[in-house]
Amino acid sequence: EGVVYVASPLRFESHAEPHGLLIIWLGTYKVATPSVKLGIEPTVRLDQDNEPQPDGVLLIPESAGGQSTLSEDDYIEGAPELVAEIAASSVANDLHDKKKAYRRNGVQEYIVWQIFENQLDWFSLQQGEYVPLAADGNGIVQSQVFPGLWLSVPDLLAGNMTRVLTVLQEGLNSAEHADFVQRLSGQL
Image (cartoon, rainbow, N blue to C red; front, side):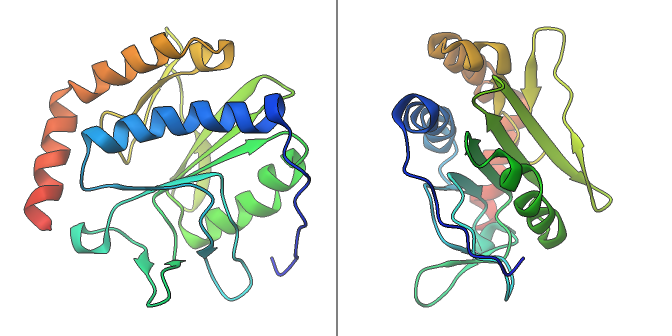
């Protein structure tokens, strides 16, 4: 939105550690889905007024039908399919200005892990608005953009990464994920 934010120093338990856990989850998905790209804190040139550096992004390469590109100087231009943010001191910015910019520019899914509130919101862009993705009865949320990207939200919030990765593996074993991998590899 044309505003420069100076990031606070990053604390360990309220940012670095949860960031690491989120990247373990996203990284495991990326390993099992070779055509997608994972980035940590990349500069994203959304538009002429917004160049955020989200904590994590998953994107589909342009050659496989993705909506963002890599510039000649190696920056993401346009909206990655998924953006994830760890929000401790930045929660107001992450849930307001950044959320608006991501929505307006077409980021299809936006995850905000609010550390102090012990809450994770996963939004899906539907008809130009962000709608929370509903968890099933076990607290599992499934990506609408990345088939097989499943998250047990209660387990992530509790730090139970064994269960988080078990649930993700169930998603990776799904027919939808296999079809997605096949579809992406056929388009490259």
